[in-house]
Image (tube, rainbow over the protein chains, first blue to last red):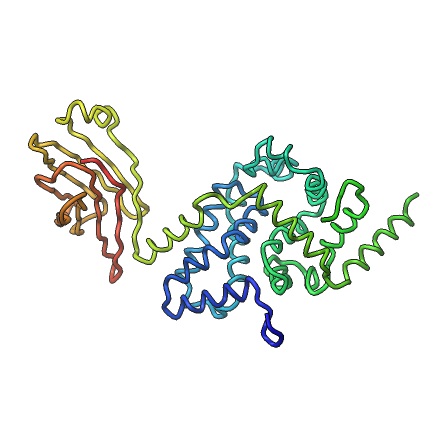
Length: 195
Length: 174
């Protein structure tokens, strides 16, 4: 971007699409869904919902946005609104799913349902495996934060951390604790090849 | 024992945490994104399913799901076209049951019942030609005579106070 203009970001693009939709351009909602579904998918999945439930959560959140679109006071903050709504809806659904017992949630095989075959796992290169191992060892809130912001742009980090309920300074403009922990772990791992 | 070591670790972490994000961090986040994209991709068609539901919602339309199909006679359809079939489809707001009776001349009679369906407008959308339209009686019953055989959908128009909404059935072989 040219100097003087605001750095473009996922939140800014989303805000523009949503504002245009509210001004009557119906097709922009389809563009908004396409742009934001990945980050919302990972927000829901980071709450340990299975695929089918995560999909239901996203459907609910998007329908709520469309139905309430006139009452959203800050159209430019639509990304934060959607992330907060997804997180809340995911929690609400997870709590009501009595078939998920606390011991299931604590199980280390929580990612068994990630669509990955054994072959895929084996084929992934070693340095990706070591990255995965270190992510798994982070506190859950750090894992969620990093997973979600990985699907956004730099200027979005601080607002997204806030939307996920993390304290100020969790990430952006400084590195924050979560990324620092991961950097430390990787620096001490001889199998991690920095790319 | 390794307390001092632990302290040093915390100090180093603290120092790292307060530094500005640098290119290594962005590279790391990129790796994370690739990793999650591969290990837990957005399901195929999810974006389209969300867009479709938003469009239906904008039209106040619910798509009914088939909840009951008389399988014995449905399966034997091609052999015994004379079979009478009963099909039930439901949404949150409406349950509809239709009985299809072949008349032997390439057309069928449809006897339907919708609950709660008193007085609602019902259309049968045909594979070819204009839709047929009728109204349910006070008990929610409706009849279509001599409907051409083939794939068709039912559209039921509900009125709640001043709101209108539509229930659309899946495609059904008549």
